Length: 135
Image (cartoon, rainbow, N blue to C red; front, side, top):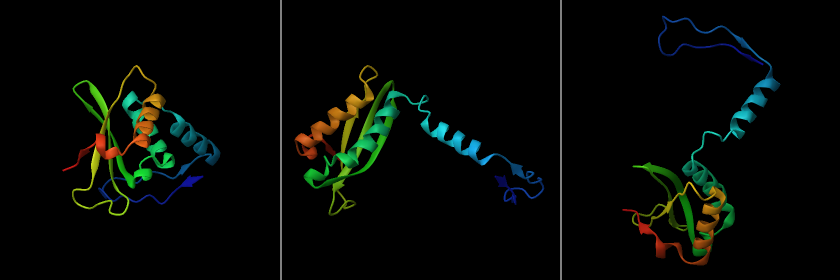
């Protein structure tokens, strides 16, 4: 593989890099390795990632006519939590229709178990009952 034709869009006084030649298979293998490496994740990152992956296929919010907009990992003053923002499927961005679930994240409970508990809770009852409106 070859990267050529560099353009300098910042400072034309600086020279552009030389052409770069490398093995495409080795490059693809390194990209796969980097994507698979989750060693940098803290528990809040793992729970947020797994929550994003689990919520859509689980259909737990759709059962109640709601859809997930975003899943945010949050860190503050030594605590970690996930915010799950959701709104009605028929009007996902209507003003005043978005709700938020705050899910505390524990370092002592496996991330998969924390996600499963949340999905089970939402599947069992209307998620608006335990969420707060997003203002």
